[in-house]
Amino acid sequence: SSEMARIAVEQLDSMLNEAGEISIYRSRLEQQNTALSFQIGEMLQTINRIREQVRSLDTEAQAMILARQQGQSAADPDRYQAEFDPLEMDRYSRLQEMSRSLAESMTDLESVRDVLDELRGQNEMLLLQQARVNSELQQKLMRSLMVPFARQVQRLERVVRQTAQEYGKKARVEFTGVESELDRKVLERMVPPLEHLLRNAIVHGIEPPAERVAAGKPETGVVSVRLTRDGPQLVIDVSDDGRGLNLPAIRRKAVQMGLIPEHAVLGEADTIAFIFEPGFSTATEVTQAAGRGVGMDVVNAEIKQLGGSIEVRTQAGAGTHFIVRLPLSLAITQALLIHVAEEMYALPMNTIEGIARVNRSELPRYLDDRGPNFEYGGQHYRVRQMAEMLHLHAMDLQEGEKTVPLLLVRAGDRRVALAVDEVLGTREVVIKAVGLQVSSVVGVTGATILADGRVVVILDLPALAQARLRRALTAETRRVSLAESEEERPLIMVVDDSITMRRVAERTLIRNGFRVSTAKDGMDALGKLQTEFPAVVLLDIEMPRIDGFELATYMRNSDKLKDVPIIMITSRSGEKHRARAEAIGVERYMIKPYQEDQLIQCIHELLPRRH
Image (cartoon, rainbow, N blue to C red; front, side, top):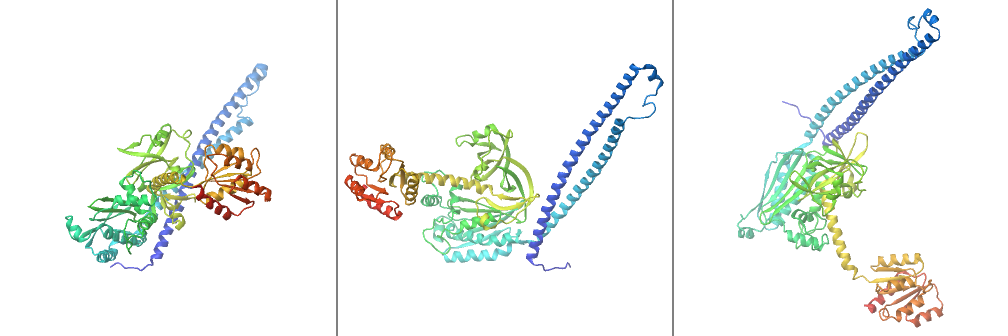
């Protein structure tokens, strides 16, 4: 019988982490070996170039000797015939000796290059063998940390049973594929989200027994948990045969919370996505299990931190499916490296449906909201720039390669093609935790360390695509609400020749909920009063062209502006100036510097009169 050894789980985790570090070091060695290969190739080209130069040098030397011989023969034929040529006496010139020496050095240098090339090939073979051994080591360590899902079945059954009893419903849970194994950390962190999904299935999905019988369903509802393997992922399908999600109620709640404008057109998946918003709940009463708006957002955040994804499908009267995809291990994954606005990012391969290319000249047409969709594999994709989703500088559509890579992604019921600057290829990366602060950022699932030591963020493309849609809807909602509220907010006109005083007053008024219009002197204010109708005017006295007294006199003699309250704010504190202002009909007289609370109080006192 085989012997068993008890090893602390923390020790296995540490060993697996060290195996991941070995993978990083191996990647660095592979990168250095690739650089060495490049340098050896450069050396070969240099050798060939010098060889050609030596050959040319030798040819030039021979030509010079022949030219000299011909010159001597022509000058003194008798002497030339009597003396031996240097070549006939096996004598060589200094130039010929240097040429031959260079040729011998070239041969030696080529021998060195051959030796380096052979060593590089041996290093490459050793790295391949080390990669295979390291991969087997990692797989065995990961398998040692794998635990069967079956060990959590009793706990989840108890959750369903207790929740059904608490709400007076009849329900049972069925498990399929519980022999599937996954990382211990993944399973431990997924149990609370699974419990919440099961409670939701009972509270919101399964109908009371009488309602089920009236609908022609069995009295006892069924909640199913089905586990299957899909490549490097584990798929958990939590479904029920209840009433399904109430999409109209979800939409009404989203409008009520200001998440979307009332006239927004949304697909089913985009509407369902609102259940993952913090504080979102359609429950009519608050209980321990429902109505607080806390739960589904936590479930979604936990799944994202584990590097997984969640998809929701529902059918009215037939039930709801929550499909959770999780990595079998949190240690290693296949990722695609890309360049966006001179930044490098990693994308899990399981989030990408495909990669295509489009001519750079055609990209603006696809990026236009009214332009065509990109068609690939019989599917239509809305083209967007990846830099836009990451709040980076958009790519230059005039310069660069003729074609632009497109990453094809599915987010809910929408398909998006994301344009990136460059695709660098796939890598086996070691996933590193980034902490609560960074992992809470939408679209970030972790980070990895490249062979050269750079830290690269791992992105979640579906989450980024959904976030962009949400931002667009939220921005539209804000535009609508601002447009509606602009008419309700009082307009205050500030007339002062001091730019500092205008800015201070403007910030104070905006902070207190007013709209503000500014004028640099009385003449400027007269022009704006032709098109604007302020609720209150803040007026200085000493100004060029038209001063405050003249502007106030004009307003009091105007049928349109005679009832507009005026607050005169000036550094003149004399009784003569105050009496002149009261004679004109100025309601309030304040001395600079004034107190902010005093100014706001005066405005509020005068607003009812203006209304």
